[in-house]
Image 1 (spheres, rainbow, N blue to C red):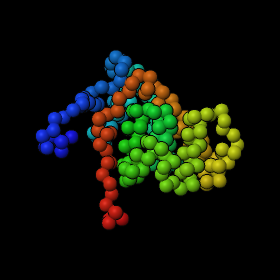
Image 2 (image 1 turned 120 degrees about the horizontal axis):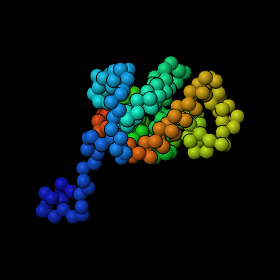
Image 3 (image 1 turned 120 degrees about the vertical axis):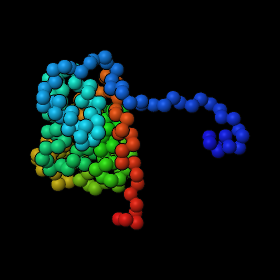
Length: 216
């Protein structure tokens, strides 16, 4: 378009409005609870200190202190507690599941996490669009295949699906963790879509720079 304008050609069509201005959390008019616990207020302060903002998913749940605390506790346990799965692997599951469910909030927020943790924005895009396009190890392919099968048709999961994870080197506890993370994000995706949860604007620009191959 810029080139056409420079050559004197009039701009045609209609330009889209700017998207995702900061401030919108969700479609429901639920103000934050004045009764947040000291622990949750401290958690919000920690978010501001570490990443510069409070994720909108937490602000969405903040209308009810008990629900916020339950959500944050489960999320932190699944995504940050010790596990045979790395933080990146858990984020990869989150994005693969969210891709199936077309969850705008989680694809944006957790896609940014995959880009940041992997140092590879291309991998982040592949996870969001189609993980099968990525050059994945047998471990990661088995992990994501299971998470997606659990998302698309959970009633079809059989022992052979669990055996595929065992064959890829996962322990019994790892199987539990893969299933738990996938299950959590199926719930979270549905809540985010139900209330039209909007990601913080900062997520869109995070970790977009390609690494310099000469520095590898």
